[in-house]
Length: 429
Image (cartoon, rainbow, N blue to C red; front, side, top):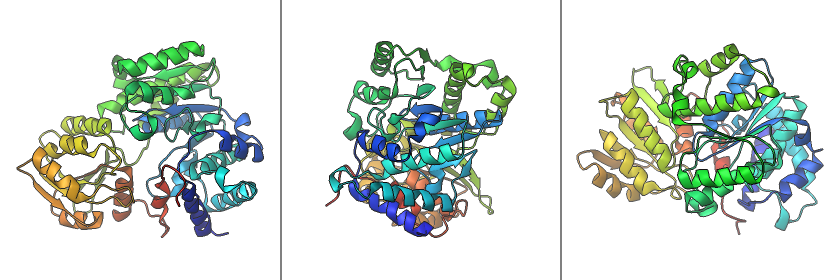
């Protein structure tokens, strides 16, 4: 098996769709030797900010000298981004070896009970982190929490960053229902940390924590302005990142009995954290400034709007916008359009993309004075925007990944690995 073969095998697992439940993951993990039982985890869920919070936790513990595994999704360009140890991507050779193992484990499984892509990748990650003898794994949920494949672990702490609207077709159409799914990661007696401030959602999280006798730590907006955070220059833009940092710090405090940390590595970890595609600034050789942000739901674009007003006051970018059709694209267009001088609408490279022609009338209504164009691709839009001094690419992490490739910042070695981010509700026929 070559690396290209391994990627094709993983891609073909999409035929088995998106399924919720833990049975397959437990079964695969058992065949792999129960690696999760010999690892220590911080399990992170939430609608927005969970990736950034994971990146901060990883950076802090790595600065303290620990060997830290990081499991996140989706990837921006390369599948290997999903599984890292001390921020080193898993090697192509290890991907090939682990995929070969998983394939053998799955041979006797029937099509009706066949593991999905995410289930297989979660167990691959567990196997790899155990092989690497990680001291700690920062373990991000895929979607939801209660029935997410990552939920087979018993962590040192469970983190729920916030509850906002996203994936309503799977997780529920109220904050309380979404919170019930996210709160499914809370384990009996295991501390839980949350920055959720939406009342209905917080009520569900609090009730779940009480029922499971899980000590609950609430992160408040004021915590984002602690003396420590005010004295550290976070490299990630936006006030929301200070709240994510406060959530990470609260988690470090809760886990202090297992991994005691002093202030210097905490400061160093925050000061040097990296998390591409989230308000990422890229200066082109021409001097053109690109701002890449993967905000892909209403809460995310509202945070993006606030960050633009804070860090780029009075500057109106050319907005390159592409959104998946299963997102709340109408209010997303209404929120972002007024910020732009002109708007270039593009398809996301996904079967689930919203058509630029459908976005166009919404953007025109939201900002009648702006030039609004529907274009055929991101590459076409970037060529159209070549004379714009400030360009914002937003609406989807998939789109940001493509932008990173076009800007020659994250090559994928010729493999179309972004397509691995695709999923569907159930088996495809």
